[in-house]
Image (cartoon, rainbow over all chains, first blue to last red; front, side):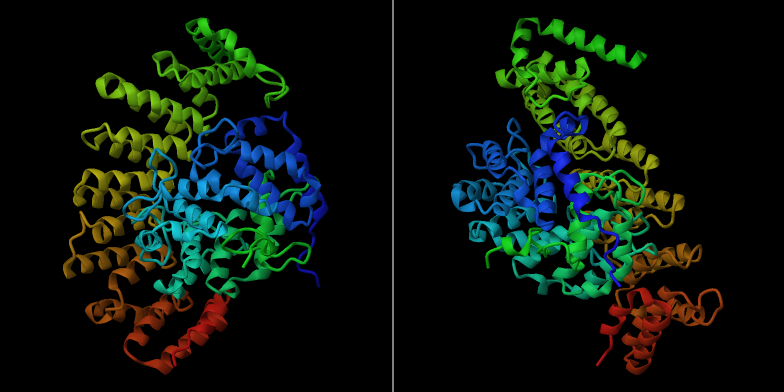
Length: 311
Length: 310
């Protein structure tokens, strides 16, 4: 019996291509400032669906490069100031198109390295906000570029470990509540820096396993509703800890599939809600980790198809 | 036309008058090709274009402040609007406490309207660098949390403020208790309580007496519902495997597993498993693992399959 059914992958492909070209919609206009992250979600989804060649590669790459500043960092769109999350999205998109060799990597490396503070944490941009998400963005960006040596890895890891909570989860700053998104970022950092042995992996794995609810979906913290985006953040964390079998896969697959828009394509956060690019990406990424045959395999830490990562 | 629509039009008209000398520069940003929706509302596009002109001119003025606010109201998630506003404020706010007060009021309103928006919460942190005491921030986060008791931004902001201003632990302990009385399952409140009493370097005072009173507190909450995930985690962590120090708890667990109401409660049995492990009663502990895997917690059967003690 095919557990990955119904899965109208062609409708999802059409949805993603349609949404990218729908430049006259309000949603498109209002999300202009973070378009580069939107591009990453859409393009990676299309690549997972084996449809990246349907996009206009040279136009997209030119536009991404136009988002880069003198400092080496990228903004969310051509008229936006640079920040770390957009820089990561830009590098991920360029990796998808195998264009990393055509850019000045060192400029990006120095932009990222300059955002590290004395306690090892990273700011999101020149304004100084600190959040463990930014450490993940920095570490992943430099891992893709092969230049982890450019930052103080020990200090970065120390900061992430300081965000570890009594329940095995991680928060955005030391002491902040454990949250699935933050756990993904912190476990990702530890994975990419070969530091997973520094934590009690069983305790963290248990916290993650507890995110699964009766409806099969995963939530972000205790006593909250399930949301498809956690299918990625919780699942990839478990994959990095080698504990993917600690959740009930078939129930989770059922939940993700029930969030699909079976008429127009796309995936929503919850059954019955409206689809969006963000949740479409995370739903597809989750299904990829769970072994869906119509999708390419995705790497849990890099959040890119396996074949894109050069080892 | 609704009255709110004409209010926006009125504000737009006022701002255009204020910026008369640069209105002609707006044209470039209002051309059809520049990623504008077909059915745009005039005031939205005007403000967006006006903002771009001021940004390009690097004009850090009062009128630029006004325009940036309107642009933020139109799209509170737009990073560049907040960025520009902060650049202007940096130049002006230090000299004017009235301006700081006004900015706090504006930020409060925007925050209440957009409680899950990263940019507006970060703006609060920016403003904190001009504050002498945390009173306003403590009051504001409390207001937000009374609306949505699990708002992640509000809790982490409160925590950040407590840390920055070195707020005393007693008041915050009372605050966490207040939120737990409202909802004893509120994981954010449990986490905050642990932060204040045990993990925050500046407020935590470690003592056995504190651990005992907190174990009693968690136990009292559990009696209201034995399925309270957060309360169990809190209890386990405060006890921290030192079961010999809490004999009344081990006694109570031993009884609970026999009572009808709780004999199938996985948390009770997980606790009993921890106690048996601590006591070195390995084969009995393994029996509990089997029970959890096969009967009490089948959802996590893979996890329980790994837990066998050698």
